[in-house]
Length: 528
Image 1 (cartoon, rainbow, N blue to C red):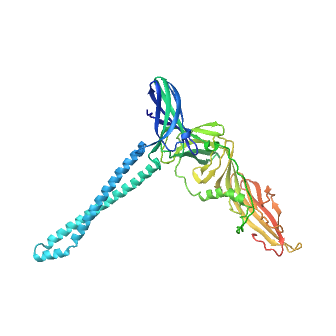
Image 2 (image 1 turned 60 degrees about the vertical axis):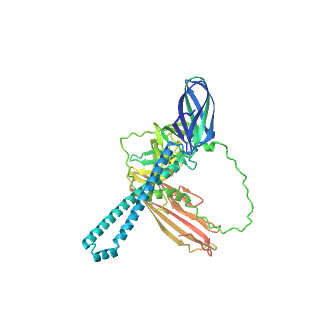
Image 3 (image 1 turned 120 degrees about the vertical axis):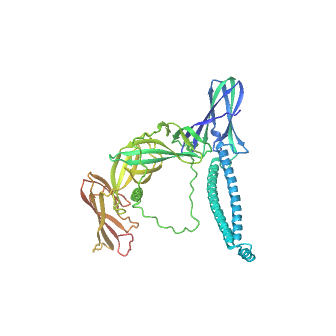
């Protein structure tokens, strides 16, 4: 016997969903096979589980899953779309017939208008007059105008119907997929010893569903980072999730099957001539360049405005969080509907405030500007999955970035654009050649000055990055001769870093000199 069920709960993972259907029926003593039909092809048959509970005394014997084939698409929504498509196709066919008839009439009217030979013969024989002929021509022109207006109106109707037909066809294709008239049927077998009501719960995993995180991070005037954690849920399972209890999980079921095994790593000689390889890009500023890439992008987008303002008095409904092992589950309050056509549905996971530590970072060799940086500890109970984040300074949109996976107690690093109130200039102050040769060696001397000024009303902590050239030849020697103040760090790749604190209104200069020594006959590239 068929058992009507309704989707009541859905747990969405990042790449699939666990669907719960429930239904109830009254059963008499005996063996019963309850069929739950029209289950989607996105269902994983191996994941189907059933449970039963009620006033009837029954034993659950098992559950089986079979494919069923239909002469017509079984889903009610798909059948409704097919009916609308057929109606529109008939309407377009009728419009085409009307357009064809009007075109034929217009062609006949055009030929009558051009029949001047019959007009001249009628005048000669006295069978018509000039006034009669003009009246006849006016009526033809009037009819031709009516035909043109009718053709225009019919053409507009046809284009509108054609666009609607294409829209419905896309919706139908998304809904039913390539195998439109196939569905799964779950057969739950129960043995009833005492009559009564029995509720059945069917749970299964479905593909073509998932959720991705979205973030809005807003730096407020009180130096607090307001964080909005959103989830964008999509599904194309072939089922409508109407008014379901929605749960979001950070678990990844696909990675829990087996431990990955390493294959042997083979190496061997090259038996063919190697092609010429381009020289690798210089490495010294990769760390600084990567650090500033997001900040530069944010600076370029700073002119854009965020037009949608938050309602100050609106209450934001957030999810409750539950941890189980390594996974975190968010229970969205109330009920949620998610359409089956892939249209995203956004829900709020949480809204919370974090306390950032603000400072400034600059690499004036690349950009003579100070970028505001926020180091934020995730003091919330929420695991922040990788995803896009919009950055705001109060109500000003300053750019977008990508958050990395950040567990509770983890740390985020955000770049909030350029602050023109911290001024930075870099200038080459020295470039000369020693007149004395040391053996056969030539020594070149260079000196740079970086001028800093803090126009803020508060002190500014600044991390300053610069670099020295890096030798790729054993006879080229690079040495830092002088630095004021002394760098906080100098790496083997020539990166130099200072940690500075500028008082309000303070001006300061950072100076460093270095030498490059090489054989006199050697030509060296890459020097300023």
